[in-house]
Image 1 (cartoon, rainbow, N blue to C red):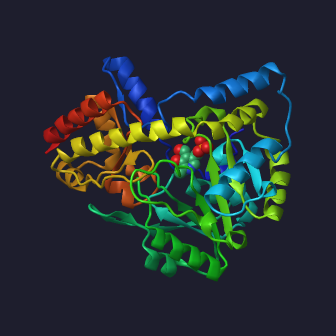
Image 2 (tube, rainbow, N blue to C red):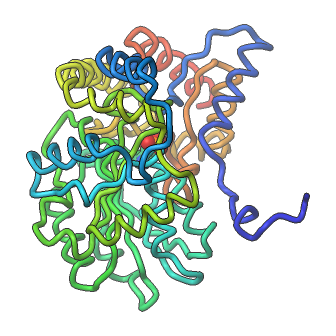
Image 3 (cartoon, rainbow, N blue to C red):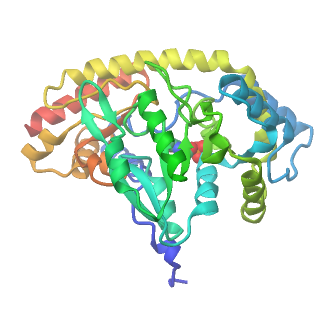
Length: 395
Ligand code: PLP
């Protein structure tokens, strides 16, 4: 049983869960209240209409397998929703998956052969590179550039320089985890142009599309030619506070979706039946989403103001998602700590959980930490106060 596959052994990165586990341990042994800036999900319960709709489905016995594509009504709702927002999407161009992670997995499984290169921005959500490696693909990292006033940029000249004959895909995530960026629409358009002209698949993860506090986001579905090169991923986890329901979806050209459904039928059969029925009510819950976003905007402002009080860090005021990604390089150099040790010590000494940027997943993050502001305002103030004390102690 210890003779693992190449795929299993390819997983080398750490997930954010390691830091949550360590915080739990510290809470037990030291008894300090943990302030959890490590959280990757809204802290609100799933909205009422969605819960009711799922309960009704359960009570009515909607508990069997569904089609591998997901239930028709939900595919239809998603198609209508995206058609209203962007441009025409048909029901046949949607597949429901158990979470956006599975949607991403299917997308990579569809295209990656051993040796294929996938352009991944550094920093990025940790699981893209791991799945690419799992399938024998090669992650090729494109370093983003940081500026305190304008945030991170996609660095398109670096994208062009990393393209080779083996480049199969580019992975885009907008709004962005972990930096909180909503990328400049002009940059997104140029990236789309590169993918389209070079016939490279653009895998676009837009799971934070409702978490926008500043500016406007450009979706890849706005291009009338998207079917030629786009695989679009989204989900219910973040927008409707439904992380545990495990519901995501892919939008792509119809024959791509058919092939994905064939894979799905052999891997997981379908997304959970009554969860899908619950998600039907998500489309009547946008008033609640709006309330959540105004709450998160206030929290973002508070976190930013508090972080600005720490003179040793540089921070860009996030325009999207629910993360701040401050630069702590100066502190690390003076204290001779790696960013990982910085995060671990901050948990150990002050009970504040942050995620070291190197989890995302390579070099740029080695000088940044990720803080989630999906946390109540009092805890934000208390947590940053403790963080300031910790940093003052180090410097
Ligand atoms: N994509 C990004 C950028 C994320 O941050 C996350 C969750 O943290 C996911 C995908 C996964 O979402 P889901 O819960 O739908 O699998």
